[in-house]
Length: 254
Ligand code: NDX
Image 1 (tube, rainbow, N blue to C red):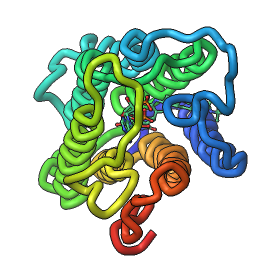
Image 2 (cartoon, rainbow, N blue to C red):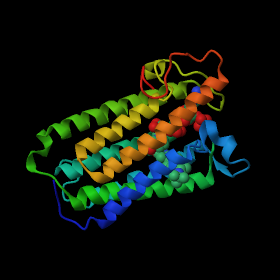
Image 3 (cartoon, protein in one colour):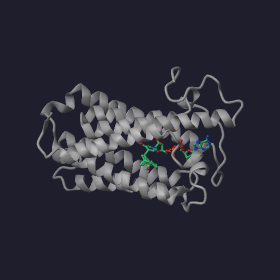
Image 4 (cartoon, rainbow, N blue to C red):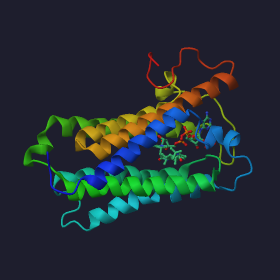
């Protein structure tokens, strides 16, 4: 793949994302929202989950969508625009559908600001790179990396949405209690929704064959892998009857 733009900001941004991932891994503390809210931010001001997820994820959709909208053929144009379209599709769902349906606990305002900044930076990085830097050969649509990557992206998104649906069904509106998730990939692992998201962004990294997408996939692996680990530990402490054979993130292995 040829690259025709000034790469320095892209590399710097990618490295920043990857460093964030490693920092999260090294700090090895649960991120202070959801199940791990109380231990980290007692007394912090919070926003209801629906508003919080909508606000913090919004730039991940708006920024790349604005970049796409400036293209002459935003939907079925060259590979860069189609791939950025997939990114927008994921964040359209996360911003406008997931946030509308979530039954989660309120989130600390500071965390929402940090997430907003993260989503803005990541949306800009992925969008800028795909439209202004990456150059794909004409036959990229028939390249195995593109086909396999898009396939993994779709499968991962399916697992993620289905698993988030299972979690949502554990509560009636207004409830904030926790119970043992059942069905789907939760039969084998505690972090089924996270595994879906990780597969999705690994597929995306493959399909785009780009360093920024790889950095984001790496961040997702670190952040959600660690979150799955903390969730698993939480379940084992909270539920005596938690299925002993259930793993953290990878069925039968870990
Ligand atoms: N948002 C990605 N770090 C993050 C927000 C937090 O999209 O400063 C990364 C994202 C951000 C993070 C984001 C980036 C790093 C930040 C961090 C905050 C601090 C951190 C900024 C942007 C930071 C440093 C220091 C490095 C700078 O009550 P509840 O809320 O627990 O209810 C839950 C419910 N549920 C249950 N209900 C009943 N019984 C049970 N047993 C239940 N278990 C769960 O289900 C929720 O309502 C819902 C889902 O909960 P959970 O915990 O399984 O998933 P959650 O973490 O809330 O993620 C929701 C979805 C999921 O599909 C996941 O894959 C996706 O979002 N996601 C989340 C985080 C990041 C991400 C994707 C990614 O990296 N791609």
